Length: 115
Length: 161
Length: 165
Image (tube, rainbow over all chains, first blue to last red; front, top):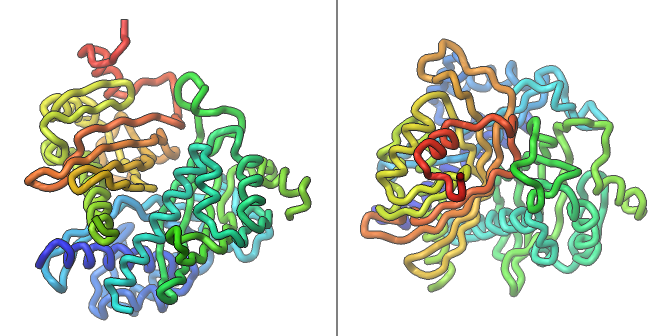
């Protein structure tokens, strides 16, 4: 594989990660989950989930009732081969678990978030 | 259009947005405004601006004083066709209304993010490169929700809200 | 050089910057320093370092203890020519001077960002890939401006602060 081909994979993987979080933030959980393989293996915040259905349920219970923004930064993608890649990145999370921004006329105060 | 051509557009659009904030944060408002189309349709903080000149005036009024850093993340570009794209991003704002980083002695003290904003932009390919034709930026989280920033005060005074 | 070649360089340079902070934040200081040219010209937090060896020493001294995360954003790379580029970015730092994330049972308490920096880097294409040859940073916002961080104290003790008495 040449560097051009690797770059294309790196870019596509980075965009995939960003799209995932954008769907989560917009509460489009089915679209978010569709970005996982059917047998996805997910571990975050001490929670282990296996497969799309479990992840969908986890996202709904975690984020349906509130407003969250994951700011995704520092993404480094390492291409393993034409069909596999790994990525690392940093997330800064702003979360108001009980407040939906659509129900507000004004923004959510920072003091109301958990970071 | 193949995926390689799309990637090139995605990259160029992302670069335009990053360049915009670099210019704005360093008070190069002319260069910042030139990254928009002449007929830009811009809405942020409840202020609606049309055209580069209004945008330039708005930027000067809002950010000519104080210090701001727009920390840009989560950029996703969707290519519509060869000449049109849409872009979603977040920016986390760090802000001081009263101190200018160029003249203050040492760093400016801060407590954390001032605002977190969802941003949508429509971009168009022009002879000068990709330019922002439309922008919408609702504030999601905000420090001091009852304290308007200069853009809001100026917008109200100029009848732009 | 056409735009496609430029895009390739922009991507590579951005990736070098991201890899650097990845290694630094995980205390892989030799790997981090390997992303610089041997003769790197480095100035940050008022501390001037020349060369990779000095940089490694400084990284151990300043970030061997505590926990830091450099949140890198807004990278804009300008290609100068085939072998040179400039990258401007922002760095939002989250920092704990006293706790190491590897040892903590739980996540570290977070008060918010510690510093926000404008970052400037010049990169040069070398046989081993793009490398950072010059680095400058300006702290724009800072929590606790009167509390020096370890890099500043170390730099002062080693005479690496230009203009210090």
